[in-house]
Image (cartoon, rainbow, N blue to C red; front, side, top):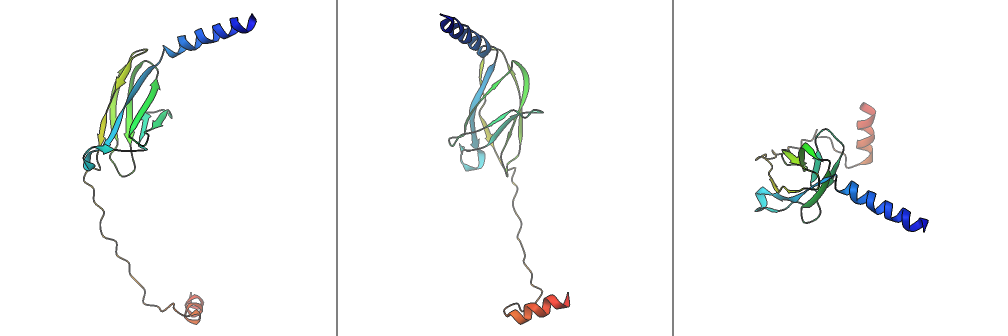
Length: 131
């Protein structure tokens, strides 16, 4: 009897608590790759440590408290995107974002040698002795 009562109270409390949050969901895509899904991108609520990572299909879902927040979408090598969002209790908001690298290109890397021969052990020992 007590178990049934406690179980019922627990279910009611969890349902009441679930209705106080909102949900933001969507898909993150790569702008330069014909909007292909961007797996494992980060979605973080600005100025907090709360966030999620998109799955292998670029989809994400984050549960937030009602109110106005700013979402920050980020991925290594891509420009961060900040999106202000207002969420009501129990509301589901869909936000799809296409991320781009901003047209950054890497420059050439030049490797120079100091001209020393390091093929033999004696050459290496002489070089170390000079230092």
